[in-house]
Length: 163
Length: 201
Image (cartoon, rainbow over all chains, first blue to last red; front, side, top):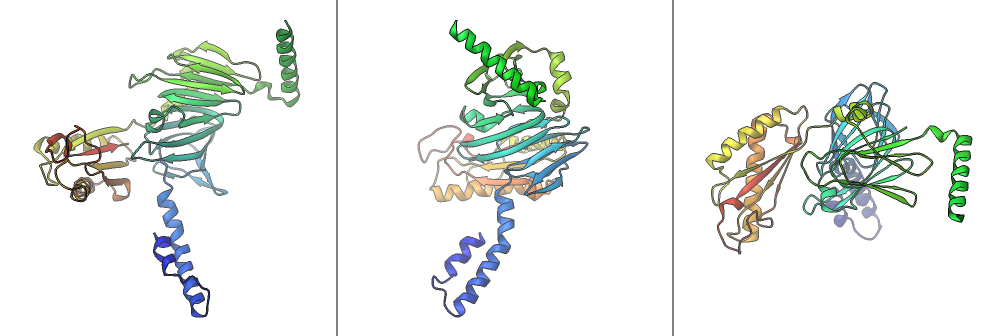
């Protein structure tokens, strides 16, 4: 929002006081950016978390209690005592058992048309999937990647393990 | 014959490679489960240039360095191997439709009762989030109906907030007359199109 509001106010030529004005506008835009991104990027939510569950996001490891909002590129990890259940905005459900590493690599979902793409990777562990509106709309929209294979999700429910 | 020799050599090379890198123990399993909603289900498992399609409940495949090995999984195997993952599965989303009095953001009497089922469902969920989608019938301009749909969605959002749902957990959108539940010509009054869908998950 800030970007859209502020940039038209910035003069196209970098001269004198315009530089100051531009710097001001830019800092305002930057300050607004994290908020805008956080809002735009919610792709799902942790609904169930037992034992140790963490999310790796931009190099940081965060605790992921129930209610945690998820973003594209998040990597969800469970400890040896952990399990996690996630609901995505297209209503698909992903749940992982202990010692699992699940990456939400790509997620685009248009809630009006149900079009988009969802790529997740199970690097290790166990995963149960119930597909949602994306897979219903198009058989090519959703894929789960494992170290050995690509699972094209044509619909509804399955489990996968990688050890 | 040549193909068989090639397959044997490829198998031997893969096995040797697997033994050398210690990845002979890496194995994967995929099992298609019966679908609760009764829709046909399938998973296409693609390993390199080979593909196996699992399209019957309990159809399963094991993947290693060698070719996929298809089999039929048992309930015992599924609960032993995937019990924790399945136990952590979130509740499925539930969908409710509330109908409105013509031209207004006031619920019909039936809808007030449906709203109670929404609250009952919400209480079952530890961390619910809700999508509220407002719709109108085809009477009036698009601008008018966009505004009315939005008003209906906002009215329902306010009711949810009034009963303790956090505003942050509700997304309210208006779809105007774009998604008629009962298709009609423009300008036709149709009670079943004057509605708000509530998706609870």
